[in-house]
Image 1 (tube, chains in turn yellow, cyan):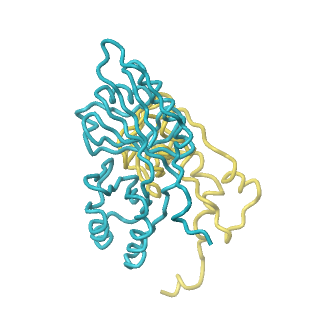
Image 2 (image 1 turned 90 degrees about the vertical axis):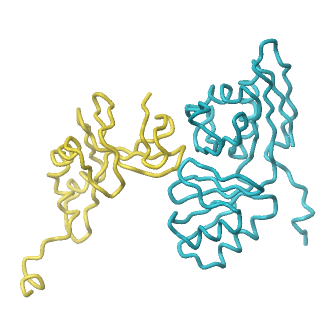
Length: 124
Length: 202
């Protein structure tokens, strides 16, 4: 049984929490055209690493708030707990973020606004 | 037209009869479980640094918005922390409309109230071995030095989600969903048999 440090309520029993799976999955923007196979990377494909994994968790039986956590899938150690919408700060979690398979996918690249080669940016 | 005042009230535990188990030899003390029916409950959403909302809640309940895992409960009305921007206001029956109207007309910014009086039932648990008894079905650290009077947590008791509040060294308030209240009474009285227990309906 794990003791998980809810950022709002403090250390609580694992049974109070729900794991929401892989964190940092950005939705491709409509302005970027990608293939169905590439959209599937966003919609269906999930990482399953041995080692540090960045996950979303929800304190469902407590404050009902979501947060991100970096957890080692081998030892179950929670390396870092950080807020939704932010990136991890510890080295191990940062490395896990940078080296994740998803960083190289076309769906993640399509989640950023398309680079404009000419137009407003060139003038100013 | 039927006025709400003439409709008979029915509490969450109106169908559950009294339960009594004698106090066995060597018991640390008898446990008394009672329903505390017909309190009005209001769910309040607002930012903790909203000064105007804080001042108005203080005026209405005589409590400031409590911080994490705390309940402000002296007097008739109580305010219980539920989340970083969420509280539960407990007041006497019939008070919800006035409190909510006060909050809604005060133009406090991003503040929302929802009346949840009928969604919950309330139990009070008294008696010396209350902590040991509650700890049987609850993973929270209920040590008297940690779970002090005024501590309030949302957690799981058996299979039911509850709000557990320490009102005194040996007294607790258990707030659970209405439909789970008969289950909670069965669970808590069963856990109390070794100490001797009396459950009294309201």
